[in-house]
Image 1 (spheres, rainbow, N blue to C red):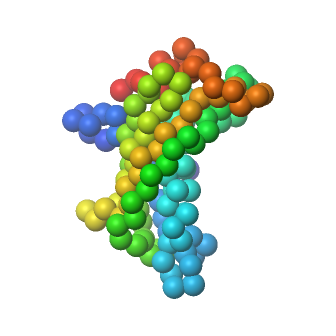
Image 2 (cartoon, rainbow, N blue to C red; image 1 turned 30 degrees about the horizontal axis):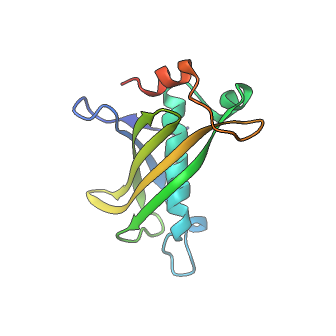
Length: 142
């Protein structure tokens, strides 16, 4: 079971997901392969959504899904095998998009920072749509 947590009252919109680095996440040198940081962030966004009462299966049943529209990543320091990381999520809902600011930390050391924008689309034809009202309400809750 995932042990995710919301941050303290001073930053109520921050969500933190702990992630353990396994051998499968690393390259031959024991360093986390760059694309796996994106996978860790995707996992954190999914758990952030789940913490607000939604999951991808439920969204699909409502003919709604999200696609990544923009991704900018800065890799600062490497993570290595057996590290325990904290993946943070801050989100702002803007129309049919959600803009995420995500960071990956090892203790007090920032390893990675990303700005990721996802767009809401209809699952049946992948055309843009506004966020369904109930979903929008759930996602902007503190």
